[in-house]
Image (cartoon, rainbow, N blue to C red; front, side, top):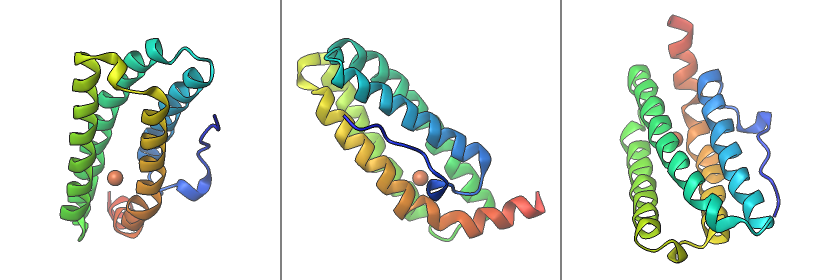
Length: 137
Ligand SMILES: [Fe+2]
């Protein structure tokens, strides 16, 4: 199980949001390491709950800053967050109903892929807009 590394390439230029992304990556790596150590079923429940709370908090903060900056693609970005949030909620419901329905290795692969792709393809696009906000704040 490879560990995801946060590098400067993933920086969105706002320290607080970079910190959120590092925290999310860290939680995902905990899940990935549990999968590798075959301790996945126990850890999945713990990490899933924390991951979900943190994802929602992070989306809210990111959207608040994009809104304050008047970011032109806010609606599309928000929609992308909503789709992910709904998916994660479904995963949590499935886990609560029957933990064996949520396979930790698949969960890790899906979330890790989504997060890195989302940062690269969508978050990086708000850099100029948020940088302008910071310079007047
Ligand atoms: Fe985002």
